[in-house]
Figure 1: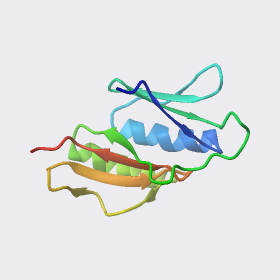
Figure 2: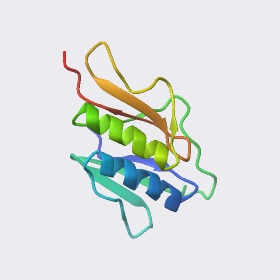
Figure 3: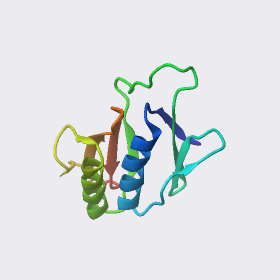
Length: 124
């Protein structure tokens, strides 16, 4: 359905540090920069892109928005969560946990305040 998700950052190097670590924890590769300087993370057929806002105003996190990232296993979710905390993310909501449908999930805010979740597929 989606070709990509684009989020804003006020500090692309800080964002790169966070996202390189969290994607590596999921088995992904470091981000690449495109001709406009945006960071691009391609993993499992999806693309996450990070940019400074083109209107020159500060980037702000979406109120009510969450970006969900697929994880292959509970261990990947835990590694993603730990890598995020070590690289400037903030743990939010509950600790990593299994949901009633069997999905294992963790939540973080990235250094710019964007809300993220890594989760395994439901088992039911």
